[in-house]
Image (cartoon, rainbow, N blue to C red):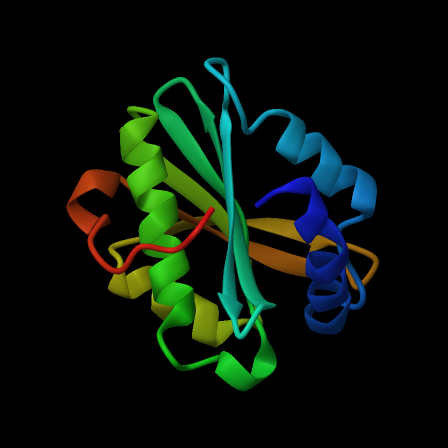
Length: 157
């Protein structure tokens, strides 16, 4: 993901997550830490016919990675794109030398939970009221060996 991708990403973000969409500033802040030798982030986009149809991001801190976001346009959900984006994040976690990857997922997002489980993520707890302003709980999930799950198709970053 580059700075010029932020506006189309924001459109998709607002469509998919209307109550708790990230702001422009949040994306700018994440991208500021995604380049150069000191990078601790990996953000990528998926495009079809020049249009951004998905995006994903990971933060690395020491031996732990954290999936920050994965989003796929509604018309492409269920096509495997989310899995390809997650594969690339796990490759990034491996490159960052992360030994485990964490994430939070809305408890009402069963489709995403099933995706993460297919990659080996296991539920380990809850964060009550994590998603605001809707006061929706988050399921916390962990993957203990991202390198074992980092297989699949390349996505452009």
